[in-house]
Image (cartoon, rainbow, N blue to C red):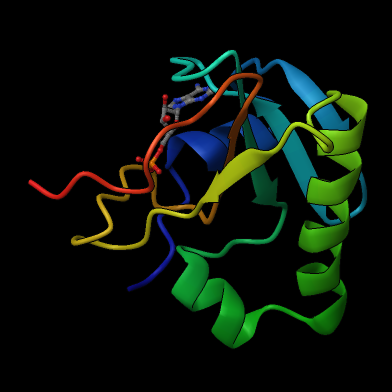
Length: 120
Ligand code: AMP
């Protein structure tokens, strides 16, 4: 799947659409989800153009991959949910119900998040 430069997160990265940033470094941007599904709901995205977790794992540099993991630990610490716990979700492709075709990791926390999945 080729990268669609018009997706909403690409537009956020270009500064065309506002966002509520909680963290930024050379490789990563994190911002509040516009439709939060928990008290804490943050999206962590690479600044590079990657469609999905599949694409990111295949093509991203070691530095970009490391930056995502380091960012998540920093963000959860700063948001005060590192100790209480949280869930990371990376919806991927059709069966994964991915809606925005730019790789992103959801951080959900601030309250109990419930069972892992509910199959349809
Ligand atoms: P997914 O289903 O994993 O692709 O999730 C996409 C997420 O992006 C959803 O939780 C949306 O609420 C969120 N979202 C869509 N547009 C925006 C936006 N402009 N700012 C912040 N979050 C957004």
